[in-house]
Length: 89
Image 1 (cartoon, rainbow, N blue to C red):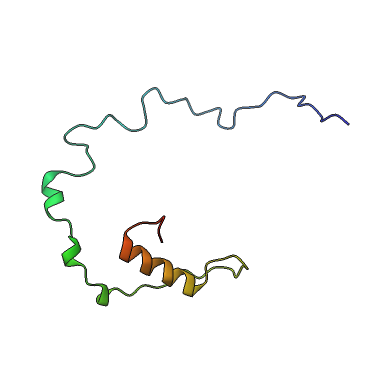
Image 2: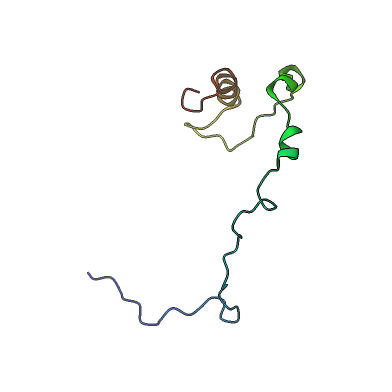
């Protein structure tokens, strides 16, 4: 049995909107970079973070046989915090 072929040409979903002539994001310049040196000086450091004060809440998901249980999430976050590697966690 053969697959049916498309008989109608695709129509434009938004025909009243002209395509953009310029890229949506401008090329980065000194003013448009993600972070300036002044902003970088105020970033928190690892020494500023106190794990005892952090209240981690696991994401509740639909129960699956191969899913992320609360215990699995806690173990993953613990190993990730110790190693800093998602692959090892």
